[in-house]
Image (cartoon, rainbow over all chains, first blue to last red; front, side):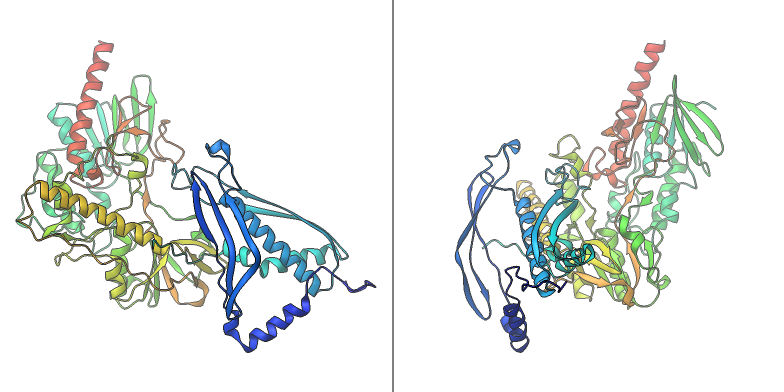
Length: 186
Length: 416
């Protein structure tokens, strides 16, 4: 949809993104990023994880401020519920990633978004994490994301936004494909 | 036809039970679908040798009598031992008799076979734990250009197409098959999930000697922390060979086998391997360390430290950096997949409600919980850690025969 009179504005700086692509083509080493989080155990199942610095564009970078996330389990697991569960943070990450992608792709395609809302649900059989049945996996048995999008576009154009967002999503890739994970004691 | 007890299966478990029932003058028959030791005759690959040394191949009333106690029998040699035992104890075996149904009756059980029916007071399920290959659901998604086999139908590398082979599963079976296929010149990729690492020899003795001596193999089902988990622990990565070699992942890597993580899924034509390979290898290394600690403590307590070489530890498992996470099965690199992902028992003929949600018999150390007079023998960790070995049949059969005899006595007293 390119028929809108006013320029499309989803709050995404497309020029900057395209500029970054051009810059990274010339300097691929600058594309090597490292994302970080530091975790401190509080008590029981409660921990606090901070996100502050990261590495990218060939240099140490910093968020505008330190973001802090309390992680805990709910009271029905005899915990104190000081924060969301770790698996809920996975849903947070997936929702945030796909939604950012929808906005970016819409901007590229010059589609004006009016509202975007998503519900993310992860189904889990907790017999896995309780070690009751080795045939039951620990993680989600499935994840469902439902988008409600109001945009100046046809239903098929909106579907294409959501599909393209999954194709370029880091978190979607992390969840759907295996990742080499190293856990060390130092 | 009537008999007191029907034993279903003429392998080491059924014959050990037969001998123990004969000792107690309990009338019985052994029903065998083929010949005695049928699965040892028909469902084993050519080079297979037992994981347990010959001295450990004992059956009730029959210690090992050969001249190579530290050797490892081939499958035909196991057949000879079991067939000779059947003869020696004059087991009432009905060969070529396939059981098609077992039903409960008012006063016991009815066992239906393709050679007629038996009524009986007691039934012993000795048909084994390894009847049907356990293959993941996504096996159906393997592209048709790739040939798939299970360890049950695999015979030797020369039956396979030239080209790459993906062996799935790195317990004793998968590790042995991967070794001989790689040695035949076909490049092997080995998918490694949970596994148990073990050296063939430690401090100058066979690992099974240590495990037997330190009491590990005799640990009872009602003494371990989590029997459900213990019954699902995969077989130790061992091989029986005249060279007494250790077969671990480092050895396989050394001859060129490529290790990948657990085969997790197929997406399109791409095989996906879990990123947990390093964790699975760390777990196995740590578990091996705990076993060796147990052995060392026992050796010290038993005053053996001066009689055997000093303790040592094995190099950690080397994991490829980074491990490969996917492989396109449509590209021709892999010509054959061999599922060495374990087996399950087949109870399709059992019409008595004794199976759990996973189609496994609910039993308490071989005594079937919901069917008085029904017993099962030859399952992993049935009564002891050694239950899945030939040697385990001895003690299990003695104790279950005693339980069965008591059951018959009580029943007779009630009916009398």
